Amino acid sequence: MLEKPSVIKRYRLHVGTIAWILHRATGLLLVLYLMLHIWVIHHVSQGPAGFNKVMKAVQSPLFLFLEIGLLGCVLYHAFNGLRIIIVEFSREGVEAHKQIFAAMMAVAVFLFLVGGVPMFIHFLHVLAG
Amino acid sequence: MKFPRTSGGFYAWLFQRLTGILLVILLIIHFAITHNLPKGGEVTYALVAPRLATATWKVFDLTFLVCALFHGLNGVWMVVQDYVHSETAQAWIFYALCTLGLVLLVLGAITVIPFKA
Image 1 (cartoon, rainbow over the protein chains, first blue to last red):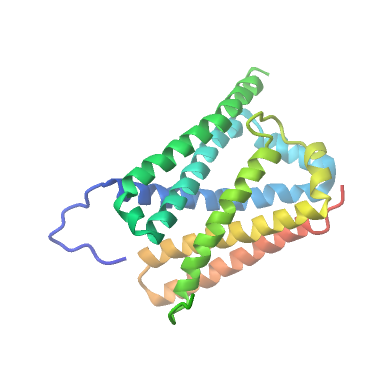
Image 2 (image 1 turned 90 degrees about the vertical axis):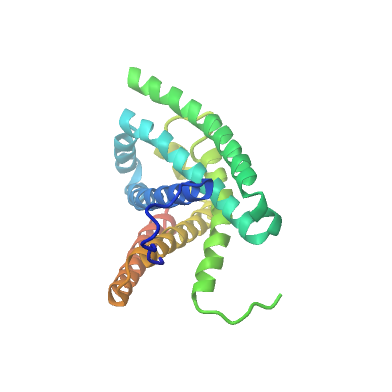
């Protein structure tokens, strides 16, 4: 990263800047999740008892709720990532990058509702016992 | 198409994008089938084991594993390059990330490859 010139007091937060910060933040969270996920799924080698035991722990109401946030992180990172690729590979993409961001986010929000609403209903069912 | 001569950074950049596109597709399949979305529900051994025992899903999961680990750890490496300026520290972090990737790759592979329902 280049050093910030001293004449610049603070960077302005444009759409692209915010998108970049969120991409990094969600990316780092997803790496942490990936490591946890590989370790949890490794329990499948121990057969039904071992696997169901660990899955019970990670399908508690707290985890089910956090999982909705995970879906949000995945969808944001995925569709902002596709925006980055489009903007990098086409001249028109650079000019229309804000519209492309809006379109990608519309798809991400749609898929978040499609997946997130049933996850939330399942969370409520488990919470109610 | 002939690419100009570049440093290793070009391949890191290119494969970050290729694995990224692949991961979007693999994730949609993963959510639809493994997590039964948009219906949802509990994930149990009885649901997961019969699939994981098939060659098709082993190949799917191994592809998923390799792409996700490369994409994730290469992403961390990009962040590290932005904030860590010492070359010695960068080198240590690079080897640490490679080791972490290898450990997770082996852990994932020994989960998936020998699995029998």
